[in-house]
Image 1 (cartoon, rainbow, N blue to C red):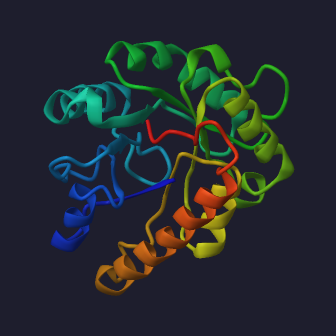
Image 2 (cartoon, rainbow, N blue to C red):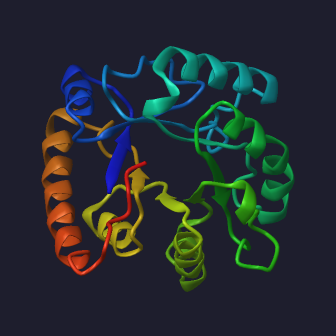
Length: 218
């Protein structure tokens, strides 16, 4: 599993360039993706970073042109946090357009997405486990992750800010996860996170030893 964070300090950017962690970008962030880093393009809908559909689309096109489609893990279609039906309506017009940019299209699964017909499986490449914390940790979300992987889709988990949550994401075989843990005290929290990721890598190597292939980064 690759952990994604914001490129907040030189040490964090060095870790991204070395492939130890990936870079999460948003329209509001404004930071340049470090050289050779894997990156993902969030849409900024969770919080106060959403600039509107037209500005987001222009930003996404410019981001991919500047940093390359080959290093982009996924781009998240517009969603409505916590609302499965509204997210489906928001995302459907954009998933194909994102694929048209040459990058994997991610769909944000919300509370209620376990209901039939609420996940557009044929149109997405990455299932982004979003929604409330309780839902994200629920059996319903775990079942959706298993379905995604059975269909050849990758899974991402958002808001992962502890070793316990990392272990949960790893148990679901998420290819990527993200959080703001490093942003708060990066000098202390970056080494701590890298230590956690070493533990996760070791756990995954053991858990997937009998598998023909491990879940890919991209």
